[in-house]
Image (cartoon, one colour):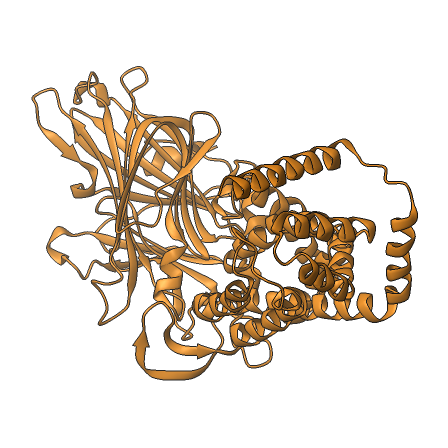
Length: 582
């Protein structure tokens, strides 16, 4: 067990054999293995020092001024241009504990020089920083680093602080930080950069994507500075009484260097317990990886944006497990690009019972087109009668438009779930496929010498292919009804046929290539299924024979059909009455 506030001789006498500790100060003392001490180059006059420690995952640096982290480099990752990935670096993060003294002064730990100690707790490295604000009071920041873990144990505690501090006032813990750019598109990265936090015993919220954003919460248990694929998360066992969390978009301010995306700032209220501070916390500096975060059993996986409501449920219990099974080295270990294609086949297979009827109806509608054209010509001056006869033909052939549209609507949640899944799936990051060098970003094939609003300054190929596939699919389904007269109040189908591919072409140009790849393959599969159903499964002669047979049968109408017929007859009678009056 770690010994607090003991001098060197006391620790040597009382510590277990597995623990060693040495005080580090400005004097020329020997430095133990694994720890380096260098002068603070920013402000040498304050005699601050920097303490370093490196695991297989993260390279950490701490400053004795303020006793907070000044560097966290993730050693397993690189930026899009092969530079180190820093979550913290060169003083861009600041942690400050503010409290009022009995004589009305405000003390900030960020301005204090702490005396550092280091020790080993088994395989874990322990950094202990102690400051003395007066009257023998002590404030301690303790960090315990595990060798194979992105989570650092972090403790704030005091001894005798009630002799200095006005304990009737709350203590403020302020955490400021800047988010680094790590992807090709700073706009796309900024889209997924925000603060997420948990409060009130399990509820979670986020600041959003505005130029400036602010949220408040009570009983906050964790706050995450989410930077697309990497996050810095502060977790506390004792909930913060309240907190204010703010973000500011600085991407446009930093256009010349393109170094940062957002500024993060949070201020939490800490309460005294018996006149002292005692908060056991954890600090996560690592990838926004669902599987890693889920293992901490603190709901940290909510940091990963899987979508809200039914979209999040689909991603959590269907899409993500299926994609993990396909691509994870623990299971099939298939390359990510091929994995997206297999996932597409898997999703279409799962949806096939729902979608089959939709495809079948669309194919039957094309066969019925000559019959419907006859009705249109026969009742061209009687819209209601024409609609009645059209519905009768469709019903007798088992090709009701409603039965075809409903299954299509049921797949919309899957469409939007995948829209949330692919751009935030870290498994896609820096994974190449065909001409795309990073499936988590756009697949640029040509750089434009100018910028087009919304579209961007480049041309991506996968959105083009997906747009072409959507156009042909729309031509096969919507296009067959083009020759029919436009019904009053109905949407312009020709407009919709051209709008959908155009939307895909423009809007998805800056999105993850993996998302466009999915939609491209999905539409190719859909087109293939439609062709098979039309040319193999459906027998045109049987469909027409079914219509003729249905004509000869006594009509048994359901309640809904009877109600619809009554409404149409009433409408027709009203129409004829109006004609007579004229």
